[in-house]
Length: 79
Image (tube, rainbow, N blue to C red):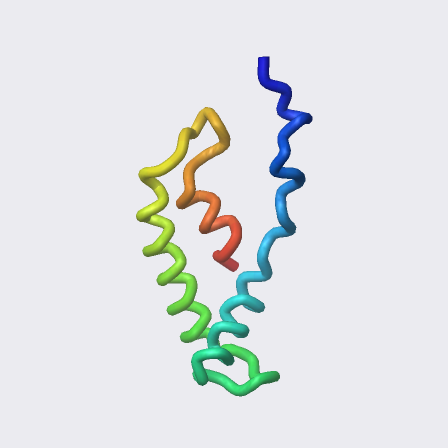
């Protein structure tokens, strides 16, 4: 019988800061300068993109085993 406490993967990583991730990516792609805050339009766009990507992951997983990939993506990257 499997013992979940012996899981070699270790503890789950800390959840992402979605706005921080969006800002980091916006800086990397030249949409904003370091230190600038994102306007609501950029946040809405990024969230819509996250949701669209997560729809692909909705097909993968098992609700009884803790959900699917889409749910995980939304939990990590939606504000």
